[in-house]
Structure formats: structure tokens, C-alpha cells
Amino acid sequence: MAVTTAQIRTEVAIRTAREYLRVSKGKGRTARSITDHHTQNLAAEAEHGPWTWGEPHKDTGSASKFATKARGDCDKLMTDLTSGVFGEPGDVLVLREISRLARETGKGVAIIDLCETGGYLIHLTSQGGDLGRTYDPPELERPGRADLGDQ
Image 1: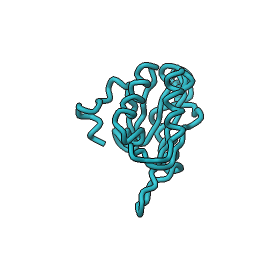
Image 2 (image 1 turned 90 degrees about the horizontal axis):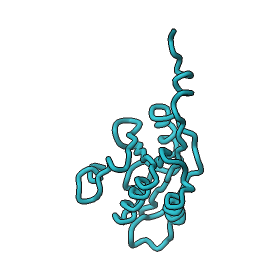
Image 3 (image 1 turned 90 degrees about the vertical axis):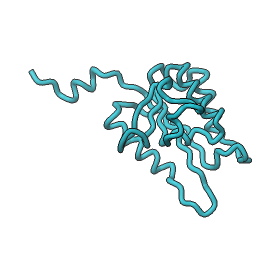
Image 4 (image 1 turned 180 degrees about the vertical axis):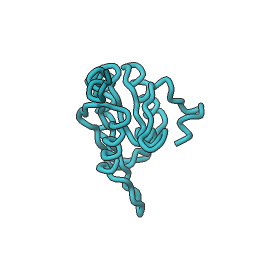
């Protein structure tokens, strides 16, 4: 008896995915929009899901340590990861690339560490081919090791 795709999908645990969508508005540069990132993230689900989509975290503006505008959703993401509001272990933080977390190395590493502590996965849509790759945070190299520099 052949097994259908629908049967396989019902047997696979459906994870909740929450996006962190951040774009920079640099002087004279064109940045991908939050909508572009979201569209790419939705496409990644077809290969890496099934996922249900939770409320995204969105910021527009610089992530530089010299930026003057607060990135409220980045702080909310960190609070959600710390408190468990983000979701259940095995749920997925989806973002375009690791550099979208923060230009300030310590903050980006802190978010990765919070994902590891909470048992959350991280999906980077810009890695591992057209639709990205899902990582268990211990697989992501921290600064001082090679992987994060490969972006």
C-alpha cells in the first residue's frame, strides 16, 4: 500500500515558525523589504516544514551598535525566547541570514544561545541552497569559529 504525502505530513510533528524580519535603510542603498524576506521564508516552508506561522518580530532600521533608534521587536524576541513565550522546544526561528539578528556580535550570539537553551531551531533562508537550512543552535558556529563568517 502506497503512502501519500498527506499521510506523511500528518505523521510529522508540525512546528511553529516565527520570523525575525529586519531590513536596514542605508543611505543610497536598496535593501530587500520585509515582504521579500517573508515571501522567501514562506517558500522555505515547502521544503523544510510543515510549519504553522506564529506572530513575526519585525524591525526596520540599522542594527549597528551606533544606531540611535531602538529595535523594539529584537528586544521582544529576546524576551520571548527567555520567557518561553516564543513557543515549544523544536519550534523554529526563521530569518534570512544570521546577520539579520544584530550587527553587535554579543546580541546575535545571545539570541542563538537563547534558542539553544529553549530548544528552538534556527532556519536561515539564505544558506544551504535556494530555500535555506535549518540548524540546531549547537551546529551554528559562534564568532571566533568559522561558520558565522560564511554569510
